[in-house]
Length: 455
Length: 78
Image 1 (tube, one colour):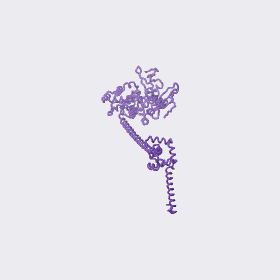
Image 2 (cartoon, helix red, strand yellow; image 1 turned 30 degrees about the horizontal axis):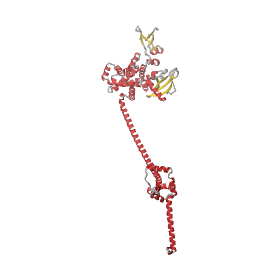
Image 3 (cartoon, rainbow over the protein chains, first blue to last red; image 1 turned 90 degrees about the horizontal axis):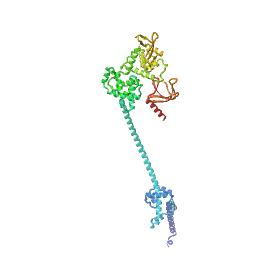
Image 4 (cartoon, chains in turn blue, orange; image 1 turned 45 degrees about the horizontal axis):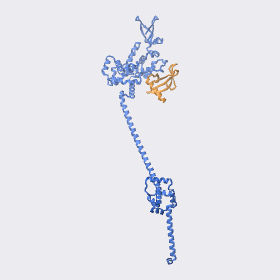
C-alpha cells in the first residue's frame, strides 16, 4: 500500500538509495577485509617497525599484546625460527581467521574455544617481538659501538698519559743520573764502581800525559784501576811532616817507594823494573791529588827528573855533558822527556817498528815524540835530547839498533899497572862485535897487541 | 798509515809471519787476532798503537785482555 501511495519517482529514488547504501556497505566491508588480511607479512613487519606499539595494536593486531617472561620469549623466537607458526600464518594470510572469529574466541566461555585467541596472540607476540628484538639489537649495537669507541678513546688517553708519565720519569731519572755522574766526576776517584774508577784513572792518565808527557805503558788498565785508589788512600793518611823529612834527608824517591810498599806492597814487589818505574810515577802524581793545597814539586822530585839525572851522569862518564837543565820546574823539558820515553817504549815493544834500515833511529824517535818542537830546537838542544833518548833506551835495544850519538865517547881503562889505554870508541867496539852487553865483556887490545878481557 | 785487514799477512821475519783472523776493538784499542802461517798453527794477539803517522804492533800477553778478546770473538760467533 505504501508503495502504492508513493509516486513512481519516489519509489525509484528509494530503491536507488537502498542499493547505493548496500553498495557502500559492501564496499566498506570489502575495504576493511583488504586492510586487515590482504597485506603481505613483510609489509606488516615493516610497518610495525615504523609505528608505535599502540597504533600497531589498534591497526594491525587482532589480539592484545601480552607481557611475557624472557624465557617464554626465547621459546617463541625459537618456534618462529623453526616455522611452528607457518600454518597459522598461512590461515591468517588466506583469510580463514577473521576478526570476528578472534573476538568470538576471546569471549568464549569454554577453554577449548579460547585456544584460537591464545594461539593468534602468541603468534602475533612472536612476530612483533622479532621487530622489537631487531630494534633492541640495533640499540645494542649502537650502545656497544659507543662503549667501544669511548673505551678505546679512554684507553688511548690513559696509555698516552702513562707513556708521558714514564717518559718524564725516565728523563728525570736520566737527568738525576747525569747529575750524579757529573757530580761524581770530581770525586769519583773514591768510587767502588769499576766504570767510574776507569773513568777516574783515565782522567788522571790524561792530565799526567798533558803535564809530563808520561804514559803508563808497562801497567795495564786493570792494574791501574786496582791500585791507584789504594795508593791514594795511603797518601792521604800521610802528614806534611813526612815530606819535609824526606826533603831534608834527600830521600824523596825512597819515600815514593815506601808509599808503594805500604799500599800495594805485594804487587809492587812482584812487578818488573819497568812496572815499578810506572808505579813510582803514579805515586808521585797522586800526591798532588792527595794534597791539592801543597806544591809537591817543592818536596819530591819528579821520577822523570831522576831518570834524566841518571842519564846525565851516564853520558858524562862517556865524555859528553848534557847541558839541558832538568828539574821539577822545567815543565817543558819534563814533557819532552816523558814523550821520548813513551815513544821509545813503542819502538822497543813493537814488532813492526824495528826497521833495521833506519839510519838515525834516535832522530826518528825524537821527531815522532816531539814533532814540530824538535825541528824548532837549536842544534845543541837537539844534541842533548838525542843523548837523553839514547840513555833512556834499554841496553838490548841499544846494542841491536842504535849507535851512541857521542861518537867520541872513549873508554879509558886502567890496567893492573895503572896505565891508561885510549881504546876504541864504543861504536867501533860494537861494529867489531866484541861488545856484548849481556855479559858486559869488552875485548881490549893494548899497544903491544895483547888482549885483555874485562867483565 | 798502514791499514790491516782480515786475511792480511803480518810478516815479522822470513820465518815468522801471521795471518789476521779477526780485528777486535776494546777500550778504543785495536787488537788483531792472528794465527801462525805455518804449522803448528797457534793463535796470537797483537795490539795496534799509533804515534803520529807511525803504526806500532806488539804482542799481547795480558791475560785479562786475552780473556776479553776471547769473549768478544765468542759473542761475534753467536
